[in-house]
Every structure is written in structure tokens, then in C-alpha cells.
Length: 155
Image 1 (cartoon, rainbow, N blue to C red):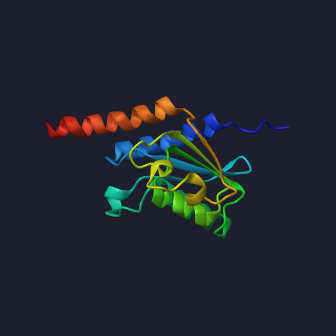
Image 2: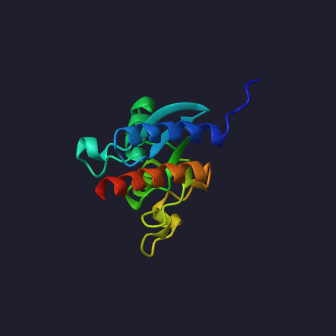
């Protein structure tokens, strides 16, 4: 019997998506959605390319997963994302009814868990399970190096 792949495995694939974003001068956030140990969707930030502030990695992955499943509910799926989702993406996750969210680095400024007076239970579907900190250092380092590079270009 085949062993199920673990969270680190899938987060490394999300990191590869984030690296694609980095190479395209997008904020390096990547996401994959998994159902039954199989990747059904991938995404990375496309905000600059599409001139669309809603083109976050999670949103790209939600759309691809819904198309793959031919349905809008992702309750049997896990979202792996390199950065804690923002409130917009958490709201979208609520509507998809995603079963589980696994994120790498925390977003201390714009992460959904710190936004206003909301708690994670209000922003996400009540059945959604959340796990954070998977490959946190690698995810955080990629974001930090992106913004360091941006600051260097400006000086």
C-alpha cells in the first residue's frame, strides 16, 4: 500500500509555485490544493501580471480546483499555501468550504488571524482545520529576500 505524502512534501510544491512568482517579479506566494493525496490545483500570485489585486495564489488555486472537480465545494481538499492567507482569501476559503488549510509563514501585517476584531472561526468555515508553520523558515526567507531585492532596486 502506498504511503500518504506528508505536509512538508506538498508545502515544497507550494514553495516551487512561490518561486515561479518570484521569478516573474510577483510577491512569492504559492499554493497547491490536494484531494486524496493528489494535487488537483496549483497557483501563484499573478497580481502584477494581470493588474488584479484579487489574483492571489489561493484564488488561482481555488478556481483551478473547482474546475478540476466540476464543483465549487472543496470540503475534501487541503490547501497548502506558503503564506498565511489574507482576509480576502480566508473569505473565499469559507465559501469553498475547504477542509483544511496548511500554511508556511505567518503574515503578521495582513494575515487573516490578526485582521480587525475577527477570529479565525468567523472568517473560515467552522469545519475547516488550520495548521501553520510548515516549512516556515523557507517560506519566510523567500518572501524576505523578495522584498529585500525590491528595496535594493529602489535605493
